[in-house]
Length: 374
Image 1 (tube, rainbow, N blue to C red):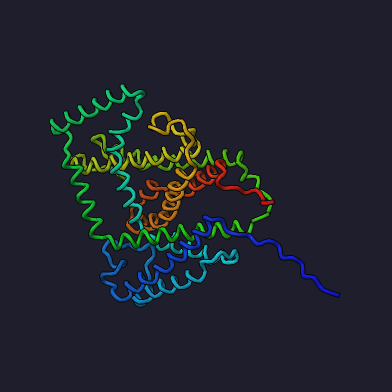
Image 2 (image 1 turned 30 degrees about the vertical axis):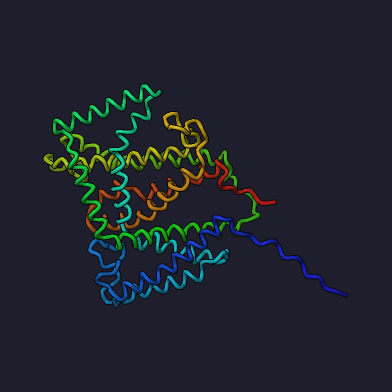
């Protein structure tokens, strides 16, 4: 008599994206080792010794200085070990996502991103009307009109190109002087995103073959995704509209400001406000027609379907950044007694809302499927 072993049920496997996520978590963990060692050997000039480093949570004074970099090295070693496609490891990967995404991040990456977005506003003001004009002749006329207007403003001194170039030069100089600190801050945020994605992948592996959840059906996702996208848009309004007051003599931000603000500061504030509102408008693309089909003003690709990953990748990155920045911004506002930051930067709502809208978009476009496999 022979005993036959029952066949093992098929094990869940990671998708190609999941395998790349595991590799990214492994490589990210390896980088933690030299970064921690760098700060351990040279704490004054290391990546966490910069004057702009403002930790969200400070260790007590009684804790030795070597504890933090040693802990980072230990986290790197642990990350190398748990960066595996094993569903049972999801609590540990989730812990890494919380620690590096919410607790060890600072507001620096968000400020850097805001400045980069603000630099795009002058380009949008010049190029936008040309793209929106219908027909080649209309675009030529609009382009010529904009060029003439800019020339007139420069000639009369209303618009000073030196202001913008001065901004660009000072910004570039600041980045050059803090590149190591900034790079490590970006590394921290990226790590939070990687471990979050890996956790989601492992949880999906645990659910493989389970019945589909009704709220994840495409028709249901379209409804709650639309609500989420409008919530994300609304979150851009407080800061954006307050900055619009800088177009008037009654500038306001957490209280009335000096009406004699110099032109350079006023222009910079207005650019930041427009960048914020523009980001809010882009959140609506998750549910609008122009989020699935290129609008008429896009050259070459107009009328064609938008590749799903074109909006999904940046929207996911921004949603992760905003969510991770929520804790540092609230902690910083309380520490500096600047509670207006809590309502001016509602990242604690904006990030999750944008993430939900992006998930709904991915479900509707077929990028994310929740139906059980045959």
